[in-house]
Image 1 (cartoon, one colour):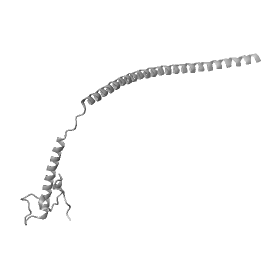
Image 2 (cartoon, one colour):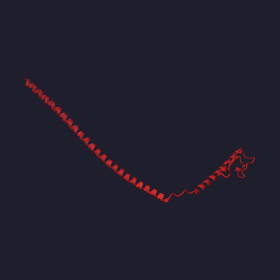
Image 3 (cartoon, rainbow, N blue to C red):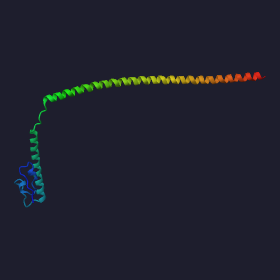
Image 4 (cartoon, rainbow, N blue to C red):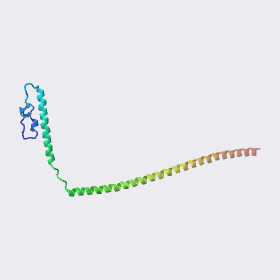
Length: 155
């Protein structure tokens, strides 16, 4: 019933059964006075140490693999393209900043013009109201004069 493990596999030592006596190092065999859970804890520690060691060895193997160096010419070409793109974006940024400043100045000028026109409209409305009141007063005076002339003409 136990699965067959390939002993050449790098992680084969961590795959052994906890009850397998070959998994425990010499000197850690259970004595008659030890509780079975104590042996399990000892075995777990041993397995954990083995896993850590195998992991460290696997990492050391990975560090030895040096990624291939990119082609220097391709790298320089890419850097040149990126620098050209950077210059283009800086020019575009400058143009946009100039357009923004120009738009702000134009908006401020239009705002001042609108204020001036509003002030003119207010003045003209006041003048129109004054003229309207003056005409009403004049109309009343003229209507009274007409009424007086009618009365005089009827006498």
